[in-house]
Length: 204
Image (tube, rainbow, N blue to C red; front, side, top):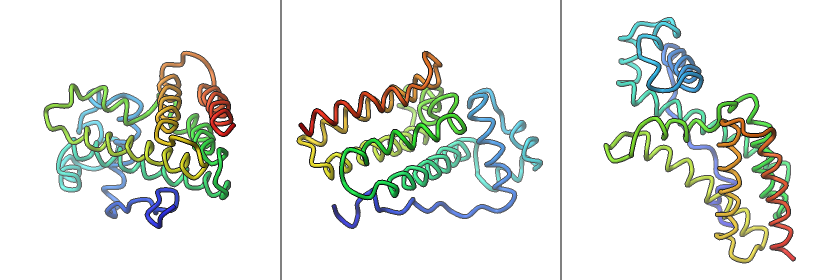
């Protein structure tokens, strides 16, 4: 494991926000997640934040930039949450892989009752060929999680760690979509159980 390992890397620093920008971001984050991107206009965000539209544009420049900031700050909080769970399982092994699912279980009810904010934003924007800034941000977040799974599987001495990381990623993504769709209860617990059996088999 290198010094650049994701499991030890700090959460990327985000630019500090003014009090007004913080109010805008907090309001936008709640509205974007609960109502959807297209359903929420800058007037609604400004009113909820108790600022003028000019303040919103002065701080973020555009609704698109505010949307990206919303996704980045949620992702930063999620990474801190994952890091806290990994810190509880310091020794390499399958339990560290499963710690990502444990993090998702404790995060999901309070923070993601409608599923993944990145997936939801990606679904609303379109086909991804218009240069919208949401697409590289969503791709970055998912690439980070996949790379983290690959690192953890490598640490656990799993043969073909990349293939196993793909399996873990599919279980994770399937669970977070199921959370949003409410197809059945406790999908992350189910995904963790399946992951545990697969990982146990991979290690013999």
